[in-house]
Image (cartoon, rainbow, N blue to C red):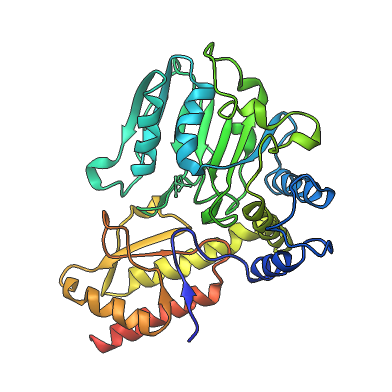
Length: 360
Ligand SMILES: *Cc1c(COP(=O)(O)O)cnc(C)c1O
């Protein structure tokens, strides 16, 4: 049976990236040796590293005064590496979900944290508005897409202080004005690759200013020395995840880059949200204006709650995988990242319509 993958992360990747990865495991770069077995200090690998960075710079239009790094540890490790590198005394956080809350928690190890606004009162179903970003802070931290709740900050906001963004789950889904951010980071496993590699984009002049000593591996400056050789190669990089990221970004570029991705992502999301709004059996959980293009959260409409388990079963029989909502929201979540084909969204919509007919 055909499986439609709606997992939230790790999640669907482009088929051609998977095919190249399989081939590279057998034989990397015509060396006769597989990528899992080769030294990261070989020319073929150094080329992949350089190309991967180049793809990031090209797709996101990243200026030269920003460093681009590929590290280990996941976005969760960045929750403390961000304040370790950027916080002198105080930082501000926008609390739009548990990831944002976890990020703020780690920042408290390094200084004062101000929660500028929070949507915890309504299970993070909206993005707070009308807050004022304090100017006496070293940076303002946001989470652009709230993977669990299906809300998203759709614009690159103007901040009077350095803006830091966790873009784990919407990076490369739309064009971003990188110059509005001091730093952008995230785990690759939602939209740019498999689990195991973390991307960090940071403006270089922001580094080395905390006045605190910092461990070598935690210091971003360790990972981007100017000689191409040491780019994210201070220690052994996550070779295989970076390779798959390289192939994934090549695919993004072939699709036409981020403008093209954004267009198709909007079409896919509209298709699914329209069905949720039309179908009397379902209702969306996120505030309409804040609806995520990546994670679509919905539940059974009032009066139809008892049908939830039946719909799970019904959808499963039709090949839908990974549509269970996070336990804090309940119901359903369809993650429709870049590599999720429109055909999968159409199949889910058809499934919801069929289910409606059964229960008319
Ligand atoms: C998944 C996710 C994280 C956690 O990422 P890890 O790489 O597992 O540490 C952090 N922030 C957001 C927005 C996420 O979606």
